[in-house]
Image (cartoon, rainbow, N blue to C red):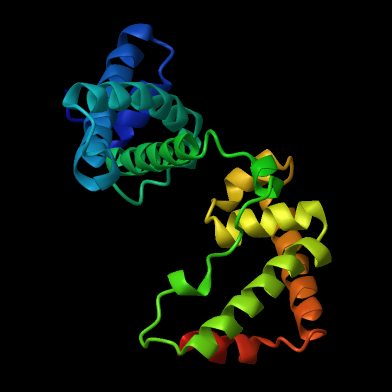
Amino acid sequence: MTDRTNEQWIEELRSDDITVQTPALEDLRKRLQRSIYFYLSQDRSDLRGLATQELQQMAQDLAQDATLRVIDNIDSFRGESRFTTWANKIAIRLAISDLRRARYKDFSLDELTAGGELLPSSSRLNSPNEPTPEKVAERDDVMEKIELAFKEALTERQYQALVAVALRGVPMDIVAERMGTNRNALYKLIHDARRKLKTHLESQGISTDYMMNLFQN
């Protein structure tokens, strides 16, 4: 791979001369593939069970997409760092996004309303001290009321959004995509859901302070 200055990278990648642009594109792709492979093999503990060949194939596929992403965004490069450093950051962000989407590819909002346990029982909550049987019973009662409040106070859309983001930890951009909306609209939906849930619980005498005191000891 040829070493280039920032100016040379920009000039050659933008060149209309295929004999100039093609080698620059290939060098860029190889550099990005090497960076992505290092990230996948060294920084992602969740991928350590994969064979080297699988990681190399992933890096190769991602490098192709990353190269196109860099070219599409080349006008935003301001020269505040080395061009390759800037390009590598784009490639790693793309890899992170792709892996996150792959993790939630089978995620279904409909499954959130299909029944089953929404919240864990108090016996499975981490607590620094062993609670008394009375406190365990009180916690279980409150947990049941909270779970019921999710279903009574919220619309199905609010329920799905709040459970997915707050309880299941699904990234907001994934949930927004599945719900056919954007991050700002989803944020407002979740904000309104939290407010409605809090009001509903307070009407039953279950305040935020009460729940914090009940579950922290």
